[in-house]
Amino acid sequence: MSVGKRKGVYAAKMKRATHMLFFRRHQKPGVKGWELRKNVGSDYPKVLEVLDDYLKSLDLQVKTVFEAEKTPEKPSLDELDKARFYVTLRGDLEPAEAKMIGWRIDDLAGLAVAISFIISKKGQAARRDVEELLGEKLPNWKVGLNLDRYIRYGYLQQDDKGQLYLDWRTRAEVDQKALIDMLLKSEEQKTLVEAVELSEDEDVAEAEDAEEPADEEGKPDL
Image 1 (tube, rainbow, N blue to C red):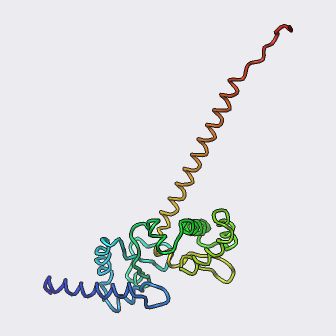
Image 2: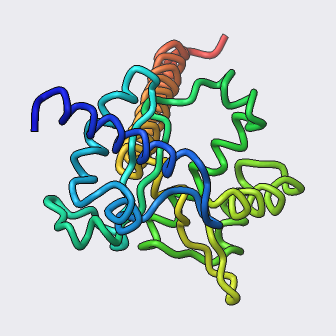
């Protein structure tokens, strides 16, 4: 096959894969690997790699979400066939952009707190515990509404026992490691600021003590 013909074949395959990824065909967005193999060919991983490179200029990416929680280092074709592929944002969402799509900063902060809490509980947490935690960050009337919204949008899922889990959208859109690192760094900075403020308070107290006049012992009465 000539170079020109090969490019034409890949262009057609990339176009087909793009249509499958962008147009929702099931209850959940995205496409299973086996569907891509059936419609694009057994070389669909390479096609997606080329498509991902093309999407960089649009600040988008092809994201792979495997069935297992842990992403395999060198996934097999069978693991890729069972995985689900999405097109997601590559960079960060700016505050102004988040507001345009209906998200307030405190809504996003609440989502980050809920996700990180569930991760810290090894992937599941009781809804009442998450509500109690969010109640420290959000007005009480917003806690239940926001949790329902996170569930409705596919970031969290809830079973009939009131346990919350991470859903497909968190796995597709959220860099969980980066989120935890960011929250840990924020907590470390908060602890450092508190330690500095405490040290400054102690210095002020010591300075005030030093300025108080010493008791004069043995001074004769007038």
